Image (tube, rainbow, N blue to C red; front, side):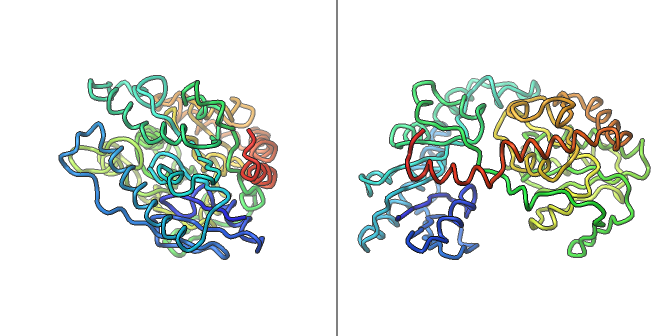
Length: 403
């Protein structure tokens, strides 16, 4: 088969699919992306580049739409070249939202178009308006409505779609949900597995916690409010004062991936370090880590904290569970789709920093007593999110397009 993947990042959600399909030499796999870095054996990359950024004068309601159209246009031009060279895909599989799939049916009208639908924006009932300190403005409703324009176009054009969790799928309009199947990308439970007794030494970043007995971990692409970073920092400021032998490891880049940046240009990490008193010899910011080092951190975690607004579920939470972490997580969707309180994790109020700190300390005090929660966490991932089971289902869906 001829298969075309579309994603501005590489390989993103399509890592396992592209790798598996490329092993069959009868398949021809092309991946159109804006990211130049990275290669995969058997996968031919096509790099697309937007002609320009949205104009500064563009109305801010439609800036996102203009950006999506520019990206779609860039993809169109590269696909038109592929068509002229004789490539006509049987299946196109693109991530909806940024604009890459927008005009694919104009180039390849006979190809089956599949879309990965990760999120549909709403001005109430999910992430927007969740934080009482961020009231919704008169501009938010129209801006958010227009942010869905490229996604709505993809919903109309696609032959079928996929969403990773039931709650994320439920955000999409009723009239299009019949097109969307719920199927998670899958977690490699062989790789993300527990391993006791391995000391945490990461010489690449000068981190040696081989003697540490208590390690609290936190992972996020960006250190920001959407993933509860301010609440986490306030909670661990209490923990570090209460427990003199406890260390905290924060994995993630000092940037905003979702939501708004601070108007004064500071980062949320800078703000929290200024606001609270920390023993910096026991608070470790690693930045982004390679997968093997990231797994080492999860394997030594005494307590792993995952906080999120009602938004897209992070792979990191499921990877931590697969590694057998003792999880303290926010009582928000879609976390509660996976976590049952005190069965496979401990749930807390997203905004209650005292409760978060108390649950962390409870976990530190009762490691042996709470060991069944670790076991149940891994079993949850093995039973419901194991890549070995979900990847064949994903491929079958791709090839058949049946929901």
